[in-house]
Picture (cartoon, rainbow, N blue to C red):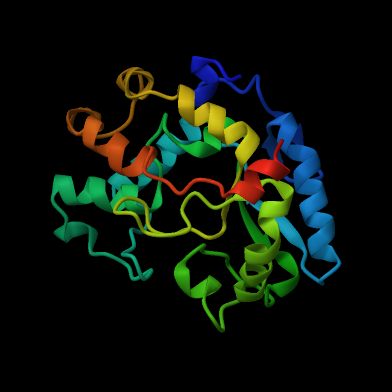
Length: 234
């Protein structure tokens, strides 16, 4: 069970660094991921963790870069938004559509990963994790067809598999149900607010004013695991 600092990414006492995987993960996730990776390899897929555990500071850096217009913002189709045309509220919405709120990111828990197929990468390709990469004809389309059929039997599910009015679909984002379920149950709006209030996050006062709404629409408003996933994760 994760404590308050671990839930909000302000500690990493619940994760183990795996240099061979290029990520830090919750220990309970390592063996299931290795089994998933081995199964994928049998189909010619080189399953790689593009992003694993991410602490509060790392998530806050992403937020602040986007808030200053130093990192691109995208619409639902992956088209670049005009940063200069966004008001404060629109800016918050645009960031949250693709990036979790610091303190509320599932990557804080060590059980959520973004994955790619390294075997499918053309030379000098820059991974963007955007919709065109996973659609028919996209570089990772085959990977996600395979995950559709196989992810659940290893205990993984996609919390952002569909648009529910908050985060845009992210099929590359896998969550290990046995750890993510209890973590979600423990995370609260109050914990997230305390983490943000103590941080150097930009426009945090505007975010805190909207936090009840954001918590409902972007944090707890996710798809859950199906029965097969829950069974595999126990």
